[in-house]
Image (tube, rainbow, N blue to C red; front, side):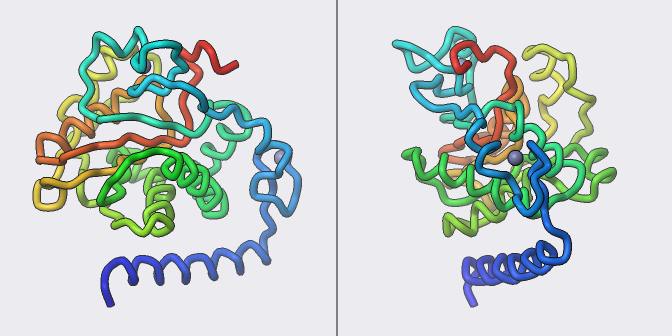
Length: 247
Ligand SMILES: [Zn+2]
Ligand SMILES: [Zn+2]
């Protein structure tokens, strides 16, 4: 059996198990608590989507130029960035559930949101790679929420899922409260990409939240050093910081 088929079969078994769990323990909407819904239609309709003309590197709404004032003076290792919605309301609650409760139902819905973003882009890539979690957080939680999104996404898009393409090689301190420069410094050289996997390939790099983009930048830079041709950065949510025109 080839690898893509195995990947799909694996996900189908996962889906069957998921429906069983769903039947025994019905979900409730993280936005309003409605039972029987993973994310109810009403809460979903309130998600602030990142749509319209956006900055290529941060998703900020722009008029005229394709690059916003904040990104113009910065170098970027990834070729483009897109996100699904603002990190607020039900999208934020859903991500917190994904992060701290390992909610597989939520992961399925959220990965569909990501799929819609990818299908509306013109990105061509060979593999889907999640941004690795810090070693300490991985030990605390036992799983990486970015992989929970990236794996079903890869299966639905019929692409290889390659979490081993990039690993954390250095522990970083919390990014909370740091500005972009401090964050870039904090995550510099935190990753190592495997040239055997990424050399000459185009990569879809997936994470849950974009705050300043420093983590994506650091991971993308290592992927490029290892020979990646293109790196496209995708997150489910973008934090409210510096968001001027979406509301
Ligand atoms: Zn709801
Ligand atoms: Zn920008």
